[in-house]
Image (cartoon, rainbow, N blue to C red; front, side, top):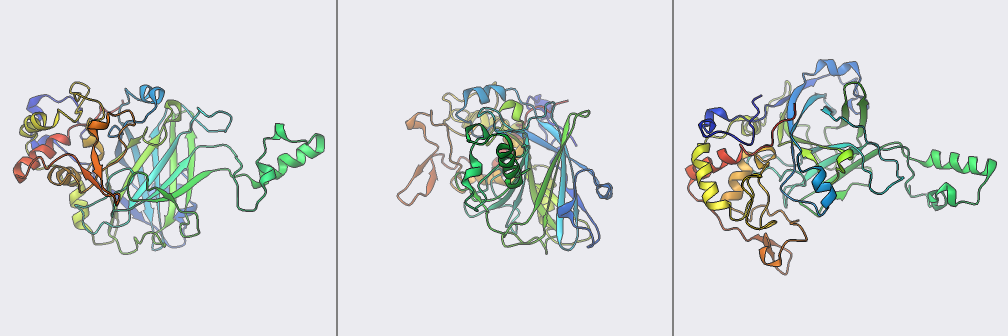
Length: 407
């Protein structure tokens, strides 16, 4: 896999020098195996070929957290290794990524955050050029997100109205054997993992699935010698939220959080949409083609046009900062986690997908979009280009905007 640094000399701006992420091949296994029960160390993973997936710093939206932003300001991209397995009923993923520190949330402090990872699947991908926005999905283009965090055993309300067990042990009137019994009752009611499943159609729409319609399992294991996490997700091919049973390939994205750097929400590293090809199954060839083909335009020409038309609002790199902060999404890593089709659509039809969430410190006169009485968002950016060749060139350039890969 070629890795293209954000700072590229002009001679490298040719279409042949650009590449897209390759696809991941999900190996077929027998129906007697339940992928949802697989752990990262299971020998069955040897049947799957690991693929490299690059995870880029999320910079489109800046969080309102000065300390967290500073901790992540110099983030580089990381290369993760992903493997996939499936059978007629289930599908499973294993992602391994480097992390020099093991951060586990224990609930003793409000400013400590855990390491974690997420696997995101588009619920509708019939049109390979209309995939959801990476990260939270987009209106009319929902995504299913499975999230796990490294946590210690913790108590959460479980619907049984046992609120007495939510009291800190130091605030109880229990002593001696009574305190031991209290600790035992809390431990029996506690959870030893943080697994969540969500449906989302854009920022601020993320909704946790709390009924039994999403049955899945996730694990996290830290390699103290190798300084890396391995996380697994196993789930049915189909449930009430998504149907992958007839798919020959599936668009999947991955994200990781570094608790040591206060990673949570938008402070993360994430991939673009990756085509997961189900070995032995046909269908969705256009999806694989769309997600693996290199951009067709001329990046050098695109660079000239984008810098002339976009830099008054958008930040393209640390060297090319917009005149006013928060005037428009930061594009310095957009080539890492956005597909070529998404970029082309955003240029030709800026209101097709409008991402809310510009920093609350942004000046009120520089909003990214307008909102009507019904809550519909319209981008304040006009269609910047209508010529297909010009758009292709711009996309080819934007796809080069990526952070340097950590070595």
